[in-house]
Image 1 (tube, rainbow, N blue to C red):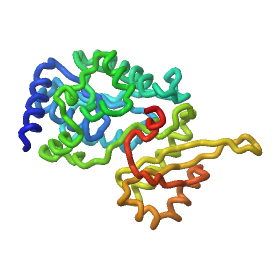
Image 2: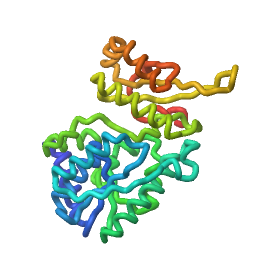
Image 3: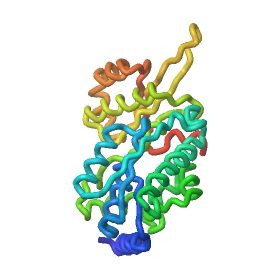
Length: 278
């Protein structure tokens, strides 16, 4: 292990040891899985997981979080949240993530308090500070702990340490909630969330791993009805494979309600919907 990663890892251990009890907001992704694993190793039963059950997170992610906790023997609480009922959320403003995090983590705090848990932690890392992240403002306002950021851990550090710990998530593709697939100012609806989720599931079944399906909408001039465009983001090295599957993907996406299907020539990148804001 590199000396700098070893230092950061030991710093994380010491941070976790300073907590009396802890609830980790657990999505099943790379960062929160690593945090939960280390926290539970350090704190034992004084550490629990809290997972949000919401329409903006695919069912497959919720099941993965459930399976991990069962395997590791970690107590897990599931909190049901309806993000579409959060005031302002459906309109998808540029501070949507702030609205969502403030509401969701308020529910997590309530669930943790019932168990007598003193601190809440989430899995953002130091790399998350380089993008437009209004959700971090809500995290700070609510007093949520961010031990991975506090320890100075990057995404690459976390992947390497996860590999060292034998976590299967060490090379899991990055994931963000389905609401991040929408253009700011365009309505988020249950129907469109399902379209995006099913479209990404189709691509996963075709062998793609790191991907996003962004949804854009337009208005037909003749009758003012809406049409939908899917913008597929995948790494450049996967584009040839996408073209080989073109007909099946077009057929599948159209069946889901997309009228036009496109491939983003820039390829996969996190936060591409934020580019118009920066």
